[in-house]
Length: 354
Image 1 (tube, rainbow, N blue to C red):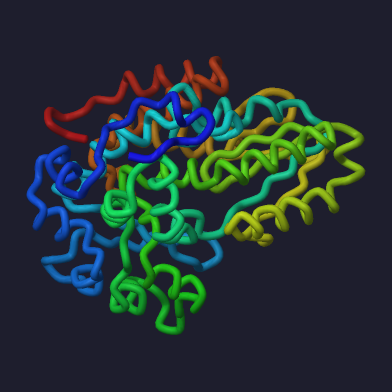
Image 2: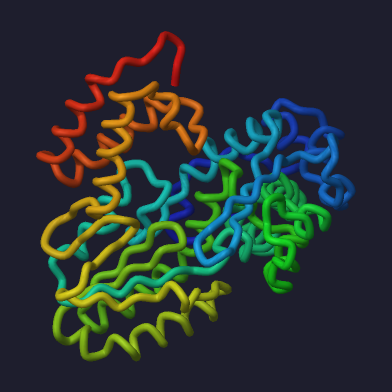
């Protein structure tokens, strides 16, 4: 094990000087370690039964698609142990609010409530843009020798089979995944859907957060990040510099290995509706009116008809899904949330339904 710089020196991490130690710590054999890490790329090139991931394309707005790469149970259990006993022990930047205990979308938006101007920016292909080499370097920074770091990085990254990238179920016949994005996915990258990916992405964005927080301090603005969503806010001084600020942010992101999706960049003034992660932040936090109306209509229909008939998105536990949405609303607007909670409590669920 090598030395760890700065605050990392205080982290008590598992001592794994060799691949044999890593295999023993994970409770698997060395051949199994080689199988799951797939450093030679023998398995990742296949989308058959031997592949370690399930793939699902989810339609997004504007005709794009998001790829979810879900590890199969055995690999997922291995990644979860790496997450709980290594990655969760590493401190991230205070500006990072996604995928952290005690943080949420509410803590992400809180510094931006009631500001004259709010700037929202989005990092394109956040997980897929982080390659194997960057993950390998991160584990080496944590003190793991080259061999151990390479296997850890292999366990936490994936290469998308070419057939999966070329054939998207339900896509329009003329749709083609952009070549730069396809190329990144065909190389080892952080898979969106793996337990380890959010924590690794936060750690890989640490230097980005330091630089953007320093920029925000320089112009008297507030900065927070929720996964790939960046938010800056301030008053008159920030409003006057908003154009230059967005350009500088994009340049810093590019220098740190990330790319801003300019199509999703929004400078929202106080006279506009200021929205971050679906939450209105103009005067106080609140749910968007159309989202509230849609949830209210769903609950009314659950009262009138069979509740399962309203589960159009196929949620595994529809009752729990609705309860989560109502609780989220209560955190934003107690009065409205209480009204919808009363509706939810009147819904009659069949035994074993949901």
